[in-house]
Length: 226
Image (tube, rainbow, N blue to C red; front, side):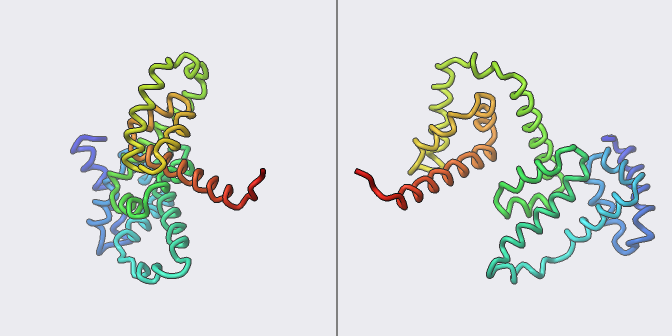
């Protein structure tokens, strides 16, 4: 599917299907759909409903977001996030990974601007979906290999803690020690993953910081005891 001839053949088939519905935008829409993996395009050629869904998403991406200004006030931010989540879910669902909901949730942990970028960049979205899928598969293998944490060397854990501290300190200097300690309670496989994946690390640090803030706020509301 990666050869020029295969791509050209897929493009011709897509063009013929799209032209009757969107004659004015057929070249643009065909080019956008050709950014998807060959296996996904094959499915769209055989499934009209899937093709229609993909075309709707492509058309939506081409439309200017006139509601963006209005979403700056009140609780429209949460509505906007829900909308982004729905769009992201529909695009990820085209990959038929079997983990659409989980992958969507993982990618929504990013900043809103990053999510919008994923919606407008098919190649980047495909890369992120593959990374998320690999993370899920690694996590499943990690659960099956429960003895791995027992065999993990204490010296290795200390070295990992030192590396983790440096990275966390750069992101959250105020609570770096506490956050590092919390992250070190994760299993060794997850620790190795977040050390290699900046996005996963940012998510883990963000969650740990929220937990610390919540614990701190709770302690302030509790009456002091003698």
